[in-house]
Length: 403
Image (cartoon, rainbow, N blue to C red; front, side):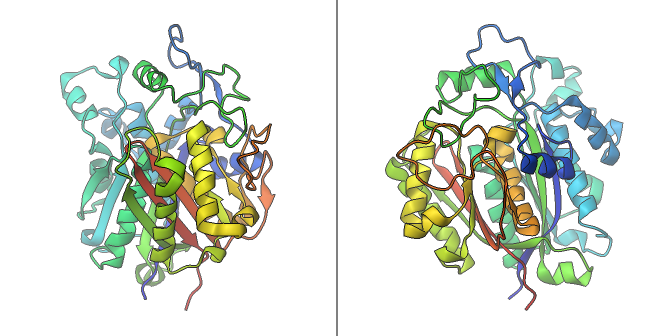
């Protein structure tokens, strides 16, 4: 069997402008939450976000020419910076058949506001949702499929699942997958506050508290993440570094509600079961779960219930963490950035913590790796992404073993 493996990683987040900074600060327990300074805050209930520092633009300019970036928004540039880093990390790809390379990104929208709409020519391109995969394909000469997936907060997890299927089918040898978040803007804060989904806590140290008793909503995060997927044969032919195997993936629709998860987490449980089935793995082969963990009352309760349903008594022995208190809820980028946390956990034997965990909720009784990273071997990691509209995806990574 030709395995699907990970050969390149790139990230831009509120706690790091590149992959090394992101992982180092994630394990160190650093949070990117701060009082918003990108826009005026009057008339906004939420005043905290995990913003990406503008210094990330230096990373973008390493890989992209100024002329190429002239018609891009801030969020698009975050994705492009992560793409450049991931493809550099993947090593020499000159021998890869460019017709057999696809590009798939999770994008909710290009996240532009009035300050980014200048020349009419640029307005049209900045509004073009498929700008990210198009620019990547043009720069690197990839002529396989290049498109977006838009399934709310599961967008880049869907991109990963599709990338796996593309390679497994034999259609492509390599798929560049990733996602981008929406930037902090008036329209985003207003919209999510009207849905009562975000925390109105003004304290960056306590505003996002996944799995804690007093959690009251998510905090928005900015960023972009990219993962290079490749067939094992292709990776070995070019002597690429292999991080791990992408072993299983699921994509389901709950057909239930636009904003609320299916009662008691039954849709979440189904997503995890299907991913395990796709991987050909038993529940006892998973020893880390990167939870969707939004810090909302329903998600954290139902996800806990779903994990217990799928993993039974073993559930209490599995470390479960949410990194959203560190990097915020990065929306379209969440699936990719949280998958990267699983990949690095397998590589390094370090499990990232759930920050801002204070008072335990009696209904939530799993091991949430509170506040401090944990050294522990990880051979099977599951990442959950559950989006508005009932768009669910679960992705499983496994320690790579050459047969």
